Length: 72
Image (cartoon, rainbow, N blue to C red):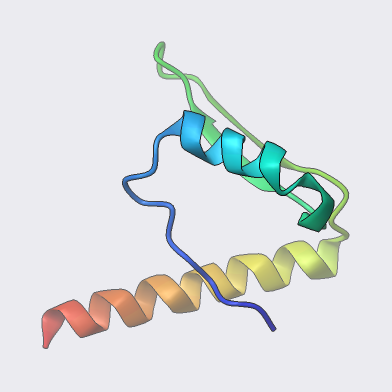
């Protein structure tokens, strides 16, 4: 299993540039976009339901651990 890394503080341009540079290493993408007008778009690429569920669970676990470590 790979690492879960935060993109907090990363600009959208940096994220997309990294994606282009590493396109051959990307298996699937899940994304939410908050547009300037307040609209939110979200979805995922070729991940099946099990992969998407695992992604959400891993992100949830990472966020909970980070929050818990900040409380200490």
